Amino acid sequence: MNNKLALVLFGVLGAAAAWNMKPQKEQLSPPSPPPLVSVEEMGNLVSLKVNYADVIEFHNRATQGIPWTQWELRFGGSHVLLIARGECLIGTDLRLAKYEQLATATKTATLVAPHPKVISARLNHDPKTGGSRLYEASTSGLVALVPGTKGQTEAINLAFQKGQRDIETSCAQREFIEAARKNAEAVLLPAVSATGWKVAIAWR
Image 1 (cartoon, one colour):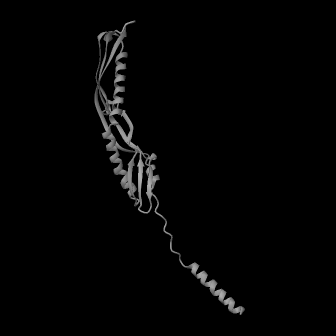
Image 2 (cartoon, helix red, strand yellow):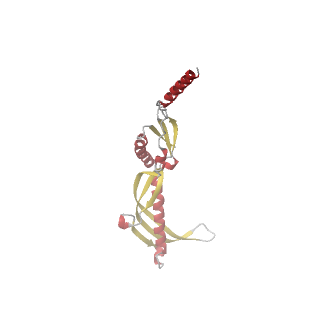
Image 3 (spheres, rainbow, N blue to C red):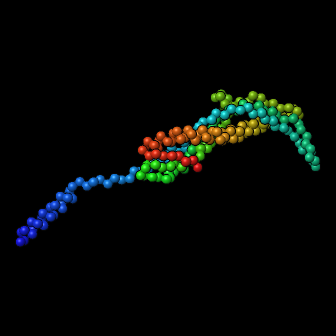
């Protein structure tokens, strides 16, 4: 009896061991979400470059107020004609991007990204490289009789400051922001879709 019981137990243990040695069916892991980190690593995605050119005419009047009145004396002034040139870059900060509405079953997701904005806008002050140049700088009235070029230099600096403000305003126009957004989509959609996910972009 003992020998028969031992054989039966040995057979049961052997069958259990053989079952455990059979290859198990692999568990299918859910698909990974789109690689957001690769998008974040792009940093500022520059998607549009705008070349700026304008003619700026600037007058800097020299005046002296008359005490206890609302009147003032005009002594002439400085006149500057500046051909201003520069460029600006518009892009999206992808470090602020994030995925929403992830659906692993259908492998769909929405990439939420901030609206493009002006990253840099600057005048080129070097005429030798095709940048801005002074077409005219002159003084008139009594100011022209005063030795030195302080008034004229001040007028030139103010003209360049106006040009810098103008380029910043011009590059922030809606049409340029919209063009930058379309260019960014043309770059981002193929990159994230290459992972096998269908991704839509939402701008906020």
